[in-house]
Image (spheres, rainbow over the protein chains, first blue to last red):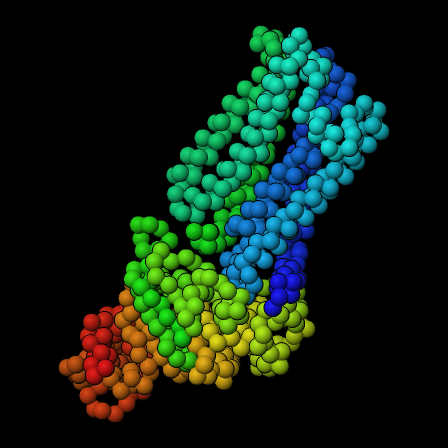
Length: 280
Length: 280
């Protein structure tokens, strides 16, 4: 068979075999995003009504960012790594198609799924904004890219608690802070997911538990640290007490994300037992 | 045709399933691969298919390393795994997609196998029971007309009539050019089907002989309470006395009881091996 014939046959095969899985995957990611965003919106609404509010809801960014990160990770994890069941994996691996074609197709599938998921999430984000506006809130928004850009380059006035006398330092610090936040929020659960996959399968239950505990401790301290460093310039008791609800909501948000990852990871354990052998 | 050469493989570094393991399938025929649970029969199948990477050695089919997973070579091989998944489509649709990869796929043979198993190509796979799905998989495997067919516990889940049909279909599929390897614990169900028997223990082959050879070199009999032969290799109580397997000294071929041979090989591997190696 020529390259084109092989690719066409493999793509048709893959769609016939996995279309329902791909669709349910997108739905799950969008669903998780909506759930997490509901938490985030709640947090932002609390800010909106707080005394030092900026009278502007900037929530909704997670609607775009989370699915992009999540779907990328899960898509890679699912398609190239261990999601598929043992039987499915055996059948796919034994198909007489070049490995490069399988890889290329899987990569393209990931790209398509990420784009589809991100678009679905962006539509939901837009719908959320509309709803908020209908209820009379002032909402900060824009096209997806400018929204992301805005999020990563928050002006001092957005936070309100920073001394803007040194804007350059502030911008650098803010970018670092947000980047680290995203690294922690997205990368750590991903890492955890991989660790759970690997260690649970290999029977290292103690290691698995230790890693999960360690990561949760990191999350806990980071959640608090992020809030203290990011939002509080004044560590007085009154200030902290005033912002405690938001800190707690932040932690709930992160924990929800992490638990979702963990439950998903453990649920997949059954399939991974044997499938992971192929990744040796 | 198929040669396993000094193969070393283990899922973990500490425990090797195979170390310098060699086995060859020089000509076409139906081979029975027997062994205890966990001895590595399924692993051997995956190694043959090039799905697992050996630490050392190689599996070569028609002189080509199967690990290379060349499409041309893979189109000559098919595996029916013990656990499998079929997509939620109609049987015929699944066959259509699969047939693109196997140049010798015969839709006629596929339909014939299906009808032998009392299945219709228009049935949806999701509505089939596990046993019926297995029949679909077996039908597909036979219809691919590959010259190397591996079947892992193929009769598991099949009803009594279907097991008979299975034997008929497989024997009609066999030819001098085709190697069919059946791994099973249900030896009674396939003993009339096999041309060659291989019994493996951890990391070694205990029996590697044709059924004709076995019939010549061993005698299988039912004897009375006090009639156990001196050269008995294995015996077990039966209704009228004992079922025994012993070295055949009569010169007349005996009717092979694979289950007894298997037990003798496991309990008394040295002697069984010595007898088989005599006059070779």
